[in-house]
Amino acid sequence: MLHASDVPISQSVLLVIDVQDSFLVGNRWSRRSNPDFERNLSKLITLYRTHNLPVIFILHSDEDQGFHIDDPEVRLMTFLERREVEPLIHKQTRSCFTSTRLESMLIERGARRLLIAGIQTEQCCETTARVAADLGYAVDFITDGTLTFPIPNWDSPGEELNTEDIIERTEYALRRRFARIRTVKEIESELASKFDAETSPFLAV
Image: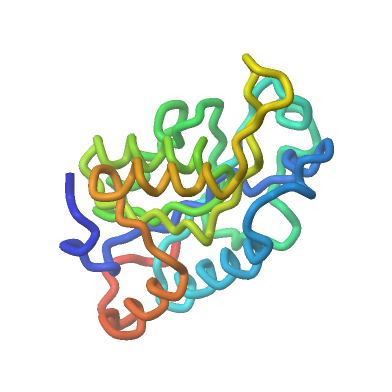
């Protein structure tokens, strides 16, 4: 496993995971964590575009309401404005790698470091971070660029795990094993101090 501190941000790709209208189905959106999610994620995407670094968008489908492949909600949320040159890939698994050609796309771009953002913190985002680390990528997990929802205890009706505990557990599990926990502000500072857009090995993708 590479460590994010050892890989320049000029060799990174931003993964925007499952930021789709499917999560607006039902009543859980009102109970989400991170009310600054849209602003933080938009900032992160803008930073990557400004520095001519790649952004890849991912959508998810399964048998849940609003997530079926034919459901109209399986589309990017409207606050995201994907550029035509930015790939949009589709997965049917929690990991962004397992059911897609993401790894070959990363190899084509010479990527050695990934920034993880999107929905949900402890599900597709965390799973992707774990698999990425096992595949040898340096991983930055941008917690304030993710969000999640309370998880019901299916074995004990009425019990649930709140979002604060979910996020804390995710960070504990990932830290120093699978990913470096970072904030949007920290990524902004790193880009400002260590990266010259003219030296980027990437073309906008």
